[in-house]
Image (cartoon, rainbow, N blue to C red):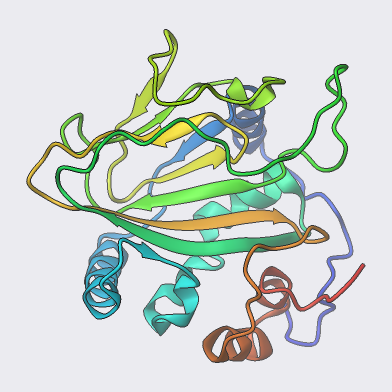
Length: 248
């Protein structure tokens, strides 16, 4: 798209191929989708090196405002294989909710079941707003195994009208997602999910890019120097993703 094109798309919804429509239907029903070939081998290597350097510098398991840490993370903003699915599900007016990373050390225990947002639903299942309210995209930089702690989900639980239980009890239909480094795992932020215990001797690394409709409030301000430059010099799509529209 031309740099002079309007930031707000002229069409709300893109045309979908049969394959994409099937993926959208699967996501809306089950609350998750595994995207193949979301990263190249070189991109995986770059992210590993960059996240390791960031982890060493910050000395923190969590990295918030990931895009402010290093320019090598910036391609994740609008990574085409993921953005194609995000627009297919959410429409063309998409914005980043947050960009974070996590390095889970060995011997970390099971996480508790949780959801990522407090979007209310009425008893008739009619949403008070936009659903999905948030779509998370996890780029797991280490192959997930039952030993190093895969992401655990309860397919379809994003449509449940009650919050997840305390702790990490076993659901009969829970699923361990054994993601590989070149894949991306998209999941509805309202889906019951958690990280399993890391019982391996190695760290588990993931970059998390989360998206939402552009007229919703983002968790991050996206006002740091790196992101400000990326927004000012970016394409209309990137400007929209990084909050160029202050109000609707």
